[in-house]
Length: 407
Ligand SMILES: [Zn+2]
Image (cartoon, rainbow, N blue to C red; front, side):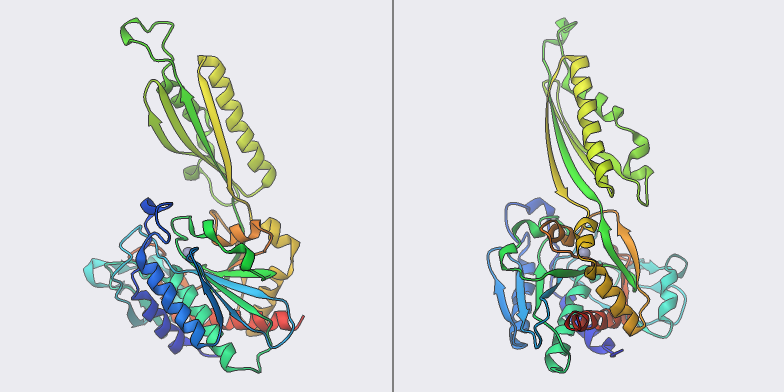
């Protein structure tokens, strides 16, 4: 295995200095939602061009680069997002390096990364881990992914003896706001298989995520003067409340884990004349997923009949379980497993109780499993990343390119 610890950690820390926290409230208004993301995308474009890659950065705000192959192997792609979450402050990051010697890691501002809650720190005894100064997140989600891809490309470019086909890279904005893939340049993509470098713990990969739908329910009531409402008023708030309480609370996000799906009412607004509900449906299994959608419709229609209300239902599928696309091209997962084996990295699969940008690519027919970056406690002040894990991720990317060239 090649030692990238020094180079990938320096690169990562350099990228953390760009303020790229995204902003949900600006989705649909500006793209990317914050200007810092475009500044980093332009910087990455420059770096890709210095490496000799062809690049494209258009109105989609997705940076694409192509490294020409030295074999006729199939084209594959790697993807990472440049924005960081806004759950805690994501700008003004001051990354700190620590050689881990056991015990808690105490940061400024009273932030403590407790050994008892971070058993994985043990993996990095005597090695370097990186944190923020405790006042912001670190941004390994997903600047570690960006740095790992850039590092792998730099190596491949400098070592023409590494056999590979064309390699595409995609750096996307606004993953955290869920809008990054809304304007993805699908027509430019040639990859038969893509990999997001946007996971966590070393060795962990994910090739399965939820099927996701959102259902908007609009209840139209009949409003009257409350003094003479008997037998006439149809209170939209009452009707909507009945729908909420009719959904099984035992199948909510707070009551489920593992492979169990759920219903979740995420928005409720209204008055006696009109009320609106936003309902999220999540399930790994496609059949159960469809049944959940039908269940909501059935509940809504029976309550509509009960109250003599008029109710509109608008449903939309947000993303599909990427396992469906991934299973059509077994090489997607096989390549990671075998590359890991060749390097002596223990790879294990887990499932995502959410979605990824890769799920949107998978929906378009391009399998897109997710690979670890090495980051932990993402989206929090206690975020940290093990430098050896970052080096492993770079090695894995290079080995996957080699794997495809050997087929
Ligand atoms: Zn991410």
